[in-house]
Length: 198
Figure 1: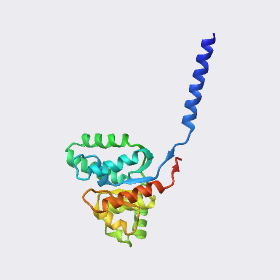
Figure 2 (figure 1 turned 45 degrees about the vertical axis):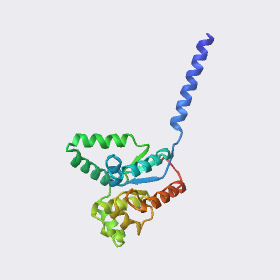
Figure 3 (figure 1 turned 90 degrees about the horizontal axis):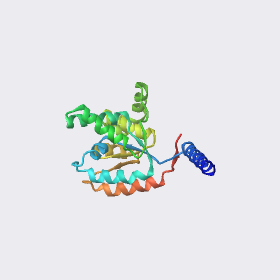
Figure 4 (figure 1 turned 30 degrees about the horizontal axis):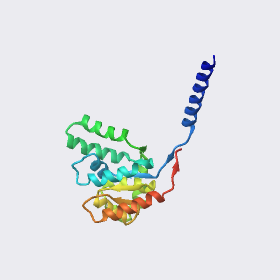
């Protein structure tokens, strides 16, 4: 009889603990936008920027970031993977595996309407980022809109956006800016306030 009571008490304790864990809110780190060039380098060990990108991505892992991957980034990455892999199914498996293994929260951002896009051009195209290609313009303004920390290996995007928005960081091994930007990014990451998941 005593052993049965003990088992029941253990079961209740396990149940209450599990219940408490599901109710508990998870601390979420800063919002980090992974630009297409960053993700593509991360998915290809032969890429010249693979080591630097992998290092930065590994550094982010314990921070449980909110990974901002806009639809435009997703489309670009899948499109490039299809060109490279020559198979749609292989490309989809690759990106699906990457998304499933993210250590943090996936955040797609907004799905801008025509009016939203026009407003972004009215508000931000007067700045120097107006020279960006259309897709890059939408990705950059998406990061700016959500105050994301943007990680990129795209020198053109970096140069144009940096003049207007300081929270873009260049992660490319073959650049003198790499070391400076990584230390700035690390400082910004630690300085950014953590947000609670809604």
